[in-house]
Length: 349
Ligand code: SF4
Image (cartoon, rainbow, N blue to C red; front, side):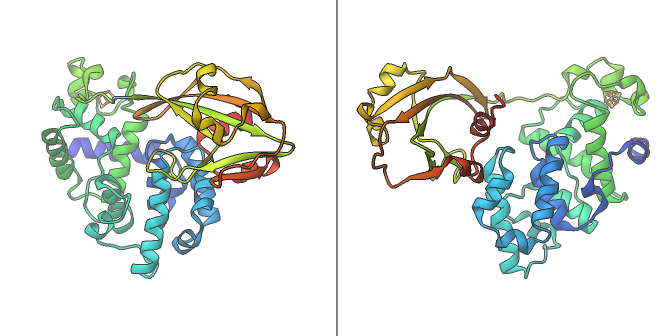
């Protein structure tokens, strides 16, 4: 254990990336960086971190922002519930803790959107508390070095990894130690083809000596993906188009999108145009279908969104349902939209 720690710590002091959240212990910034970086690459997350810290320098600024403003800033990162939880928690801390981030681990863990991993990261980095932060990188390093073949996504597996991580963190600077392990997994002991020959742990690494790098760590559950089919209608009349806010308990809650009909499969355009829902916003007698794009796919963790864009020119003004918002086309970028529509609007598909 001592050899493992000392070599990882040394490696970290030599090779860690200089990232803005590494130059602070302020729990607000650490929390922000951890939430932004969940399921996000560092290079992408960095720009969001900078935008958020510049726009909301304090937790009270974040609490006082409107949800639309936060979602707009978050646009493109995906997992929008993280942004909503961020807002909720900022308000909670402002109301219940006078804007001061709680210092105790159990209170940090009780915050909305903060799980075991994030609580441990904040507690250790900001408050020097001895809690191991175990993310995917740490699971991988421990599994390979110690030769643990218990799946990382089972109760037993989690207990085994937590026990080892707990032992390793004792007597260290916990914030530095947690970051060192995570960084080592991110840069050195990578998922594919780690550069073991240059690894400071290679002489004692189980996976390297037994040629089991590709087999570790073991994961049991395969992510099941559900196919969904979204037919978007981009309505156009003079300089106007229409958007709708997604209010249901579903993906992209509170984001805006073009009027959409969800179908159970890749329905033909003829069948789609005969659906009764359509008449709510397009009367075929008063509109021309300008174009129908091919189906495209947008992948989420548990869902595969098949979507297509149907451009419709309205021949005359029609009365739209109340939940459709009339938008001047030049203002469309003021609205937070899902990534796939942002891609469509910016022409980066
Ligand atoms: S030797 Fe290879 S598998 Fe083992 S810890 Fe180093 S990089 Fe990871």
